[in-house]
Length: 276
Image 1 (cartoon, rainbow, N blue to C red):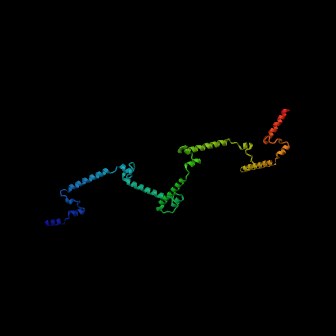
Image 2 (image 1 turned 120 degrees about the horizontal axis):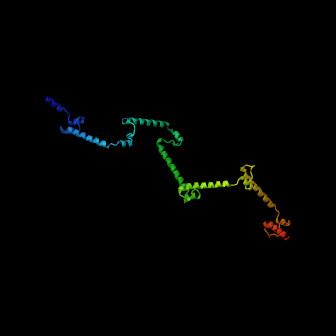
Image 3 (image 1 turned 30 degrees about the vertical axis):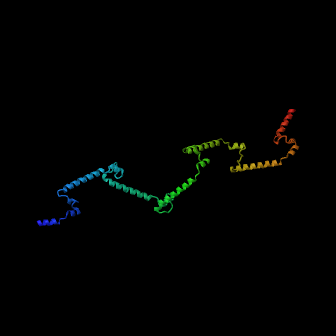
């Protein structure tokens, strides 16, 4: 039997082989046979301390709730079914997203409504095309701003009221100016004479028998006729010699202006009556 025990001892694996196969812990063959228990106990203490430190450092439930890792503490779901509730909410969200994707407008409808560009550009180039469009619009706006009239020109044209009023009061001032002008026009319209008054004073000719659009043409024609008649009468009037021979004009030329010949004749008659 001694030889059998010696034979088994010779065939037993070494400490290194037992460590490689996982039967013996690493470095255990270097520890005295009386210390493995102490080593195991010390290892357990170290592990407990490591676990305790990790538990002390883990975030609180409130922090996990704020970061979205854990549901809010005010939820009515028991902790055991939190995972099942979360899975159900994810399914509901996926179903809602699926419904919205089915109802979303097609690319043709988006182009028709102006949301999507009408150019046929591949999807990877859409962002670049949109950026290019924005740059072109920006350049156009910059060009228009460079060509806009200056403040002095706007002031001369009456568009801007100058620097006498703060910029924040420009619009209220313009509104007040328009209101004053509207009140003035309304007041003048209320006081203007009626069409009958204008016809009685001769400012407006009666035009009941013709259309209003022809009233101005009729008035102009009447003026032309009156002018022609006056010109004809002036051309056919007798000369000064003829008037003197008929005793219509006084025979003393140059003594009185023609425009005063009538008043002078009336004055002379009045003096003769007084002498009688």
